[in-house]
Length: 390
Image 1 (cartoon, rainbow, N blue to C red):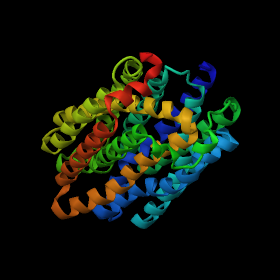
Image 2: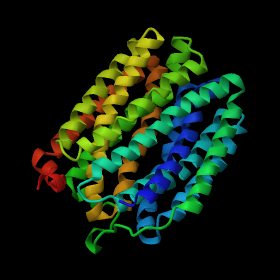
Image 3: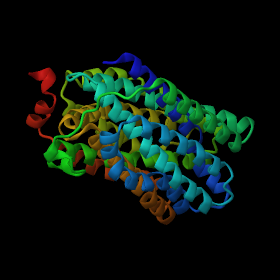
Image 4: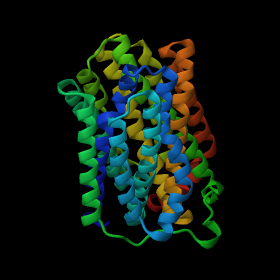
């Protein structure tokens, strides 16, 4: 493992994700002040992922051929520029449009960063290094809402937007100066098609899990702030503290990632998914800050168990089908869940009430875990983790 490259990569990712986390959780509340319906709130959250789906169809393969650094840099530049647009948006339609642009930047940055990490990860240590990466990634996303809540309460959400712009520019500068191009893991000739990874039952199972987990995550990011603000009357700072609880819990992934190199990855994904499902289903029953915080922590713990193990599967398959292609397909599954989820859940919430969005998310997540368990059998799971079981 090239530890210097790893340090530069995760430092720039932490800065970028901290910036993203500062404003994303408060966009639903901001949109509500601009007169957005719950469906429009869902579209604002979904817009980030809708354009990402289209971009991911080619960005991974191009990065396999042309290199990672150009995509990492351009993604950060687009993230900074689109945040300027969000800061000056004056109605829900403008918010939706700028979130579409923001999704372009994110899809050129996050999956390629994971592909870069996959390139430099030693065989047999996939879970360890992906666990470290995810711990830093989610720590940045988790700390962002706390910082954003304090800035919003003390100044305004426009000040939070400005702070996000500065952070993304800093991450861009760090990437341009300190990150160098590394040898890439690319596919063999017969496996270069974008959809070639779907030949693997392991990839199909992991993608099913990740897509439905994305639906669950979208329910948290789009509707937990609304639930906390409208139903429980929490301030922006308390909402920020609530969402920031993800940060210390996500550090657990530095440990669960190492476990994924020694334990049964299939069981980790299944049991982590079950824990998150139960917590999402119980979340609408929360009547106060502390019960809502407990449910949110349980959801994050489940993800901390399942996500590093699923990432480890993808790194293993990426050595066959190309790291950029495999990682972007994995990210596309998340974008599909995050993109479709808020629209569907927002429509359900408009029809049946805000709490129904969480119940529907739990049903979708259950389907994903069942599909994963049926596609990723114990024998194939052992084969994928052969580096530590051989």
